[in-house]
Length: 324
Image (cartoon, rainbow, N blue to C red):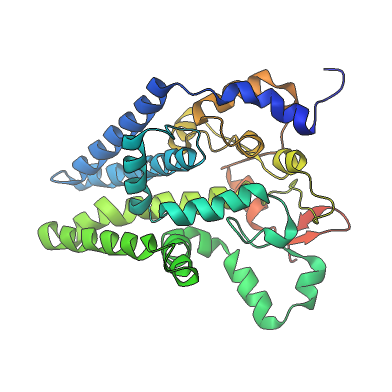
């Protein structure tokens, strides 16, 4: 490669990978639903040593359902199929990410990825060192609380229920009525499970899978933009392709986690072109030389710690820094 492609030329190089295979997409959706259903079925009437791993695997598979829903709303997966639209709308309600809320906030995040003034929409608010130093004690506490590991760990309640369902509805009740509907369905299912099968089955069939799913969703969307080598930009500095490639990470995963995440780890390519189906992201990376040396992170403990320690953007040195 003599001169690396940037801007429109780099984006153009990704366009051939937008082509979707409907057969492959439907297989991904239906096989994921089959695995998810099997895991939930195993929760009922089996020994505890089967119920616990089945519940955790159900949560990981629910993460894959969320990722397929995410691809669908980007127009990358079965966007023109009415049955797929019905299935994915139901998935969105089930995973506490109503279609209208997710599409509004996530599309905005993609259009403004890396802009300092809009980091809080669809991701996590980032303060510069100057903004943090000038903030009141209450503002600092709220900021650090929003980025705290416990907020991510309890993403089920704090990110999805409180953010996606309640806060979005309060912001725009007419548009985001799906938030309360999702909560009514969720707690209705929980109540029905407790009534018919007891608290333990409700825990294994609904609560634990949701906790696993939403903890990972919350962390993935944190770490894929808040990692040691990330970049943030003022409005005048911002460039779409530069922000996609340098402000989004490639999260290294093994084959199992790549399946459960539906290749969400290829985030730098996804932000460059969100219309590439998840199963073609590795192909795009292998074919486009400019995308083969991304900023990397992983789910290894040292990378988790490195990402979670980052608190503020040091604009002078162009890097995220911890508070200590």
